[in-house]
Length: 170
Ligand code: NI
Image 1 (cartoon, rainbow, N blue to C red):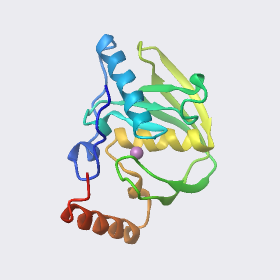
Image 2: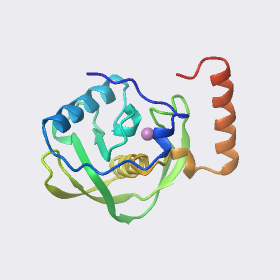
Image 3: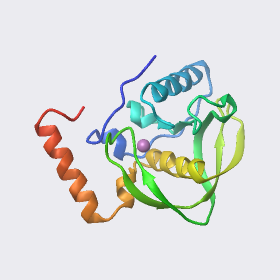
């Protein structure tokens, strides 16, 4: 099932998500639906709050279907290591058409559970490191615009208000 993507303005995006405690068929179905919804929206990462579900689940595929082994499910993830710095353009399905430069760590290690509940650790660099941090931010109720200057953030918020008034913000 493809869920519509929740966009900025919905409080679910700015609330910390709840830990997952049950690893069952329902969770597996939700994860499948999250991948389907992410691909349909042309994204390389998606957090459950972005489909209106306030649970600590994220899916990532930085290869966008090219490498099936690159598909990653993070349940209850936390960042346990970060090194270096990268600076690059970042966007978000919940802030369509806005892209800004965001400085992030360049090598990031996460600890998370898989869909069965098994804990694992994974280290990623470049785009994967950025995706880890971006998606885990979502689970903490944080959007990438919180990493840009207050001036830029206010400008983005004003543009969005205009779009809302014009009925052009989903
Ligand atoms: Ni996002």
